[in-house]
Structures are given as C-alpha cells and as structure tokens.
Length: 390
Image 1 (spheres, rainbow, N blue to C red):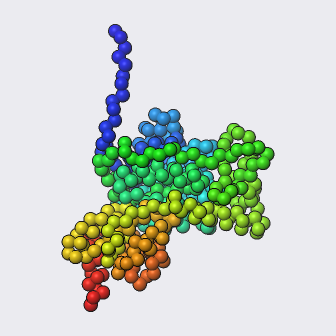
Image 2: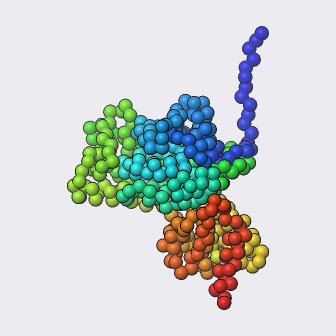
C-alpha cells in the first residue's frame, strides 16, 4: 500500500478565540521562542497555549517553581539572544517587580503579560479589576523607563503582543502587556490573517572590533547595541549603576550621564511608541478616558448618551505608559468635562488630572468585581453637563 501523504488542513481565516489564546498566538508570530511562567488565574491560558505552540516551532516552555524564578529565567533567555515572555496576574506581578526593575536598568528586552484581577493581595482571582495601572509603571523601586500597552479586544491583544516584542527589541526595555480578566477570557471571532504582521523585530547587535565594544555606549538614538552570544564581545551585566563599560560605578558624573540616557531613551522615540484611539472627540462635550473593558463600556455609552443629546466621546490610550498626553490634550481641548471610568479606587484619573488639571476631570470608580456599565457612564456624562447648567 502506498503511503498517503498527510496534507495539513488549511487554517480558517476567521477564528473563535479568547484574549489569552490570542496573546499566545501573537507571541509565537512575533518570534517568541521561550516562555517561563507559573500558573495563576486568570492568565494561565497563555501558558497552557504556549506549552503546546512553542515546541512546534522549536521553542522552549518551562513551568518554573514560582513567579520570581519565571521572570529571572526570561531575563536570562533574553540575554542569550532569545525573544522571551512570561505571563501572570496580580500577586505574581507583584513578585516580579524587583527583576522587572533589573531588566529596565540593565536594558534587557522582555515581555511581561499581566492579566488584572481583583485585589489587593489574593483578592478575587476570577473577577476583573484595573488596579495595576500605577503598579505597571511604578511597581519597582527607583527611577526607570518602561512601556505598558493596554489592548481592549481579542484582536488587539494579538496585534499589541506583536508590537510589544517589536518595542522591547528595538528599545532594549521590558514591555508590559496589561489587560483585565474580561478581555483575557472574552471570546471573539477574529481574522488574524489580515492583522498587520510587519517585519519581525531584530534588536541592535554589536558590530566592529570586540576590543572596542562598550556594552552601554549609545549613539544619538540612545539605544546601546547588545552583544550576540558567541561572537566574542565581552559584556558585564549588573543591576548596580554602571558606566558605558558595564562595570559598577558610583562616580557621580558617570552615574548621571548613564542614567540620564536611560531615563530619556524612550522619550526620543515617542512618535513610534505612543498609540491611542479617539472616537467622537471632535465635537464631544464630555470625553471619557478609559482602558480595557471600561473603554468598551464607554464606547457603547457614546451611542446611549448621544441619543439623549449628550455629545460623549472616548479617548483610549493603547500605549498606557508613557502616557500619550499630547494626544489627550488635543482630544479634550474643547470638552466641558472629562470622565474617567475605571475598575479601581482611582488611578488613571490621577494621570488624567495631572495632564488636564483637576477642575474638569471626574471619575467613576468601581472595585467590587463587576464591570462598569455603559448606562452608568452615559448617565454620569449627562449629570455632569446638567450640573454645569444649574
């Protein structure tokens, strides 16, 4: 009997997948070939999917003993030249903070997924929240740069995972992919074939004579070239303040020079890093500023509000940190009020108030494990305008 050649079935263009599944697919498509993590609700599906997907592309999946070891392994793999990812939630993200700061200070590319759930402490593992907004930016100690992306749909989780690896590799920085439990476990029909793939990101590798190589010397772009393993370039990596040669120093001039470059390297590239969405802001009397499931509720609230004559708009930061403040100022410049619906005790509103001033910025905070409804956002927008006229 002649052997029958097995032809792989074509993958359908439309796929019914969850947000966490989309993250795993996006990571593989971006060239991620190493994952280290520890199971934790509601992010575990990312690890479960990658445990199957990575071996198919000669990648490595490792379940570590805890969250601290997970990010340490990811940092090590990245230093070895491999695009690397870890995924966690709430308490696990807290445990990763010291090594996250290490990756930022030592400029090691990596991607960290944080699926937000109710807190503090172990909180509500199966309920959504948005209480990690400030932690994602300021969770580790000291001053350091970081990029945080906040997708709000299954498809966008896929595309922002691609972008997370691109930004991490180009700018030698950890990138946090931050989304809430609803978006993570929401199932949507998406077409990933028409998603913008682009070229796989390639970090800047050292070239020239190994004897001349300084691992933290940078040109005008502020991004040092990394040493490719096995190519003969000597590198010393440390969490201590270091000079261009990579070795620890407490010389004030060298410390200030190198930290100044570290602190400002992302600012030089804001045109490529900043991303946001505006809907109905051009004539809005009230502009809602929101992320994740709260932004999706605000999107529906626009229709509800406008049916009763309230011109509501939405500004959604996709790049959450650095915050796209120039775009926000432009979107809200003609609005009479700005409304920030968020599932926490008031975090995003602090940044919006810093940018726009607190006089016209108002919030809706909910932290009981339930999402803010579109009706509540529309009603609050109407009440803000009615309060102005009294």
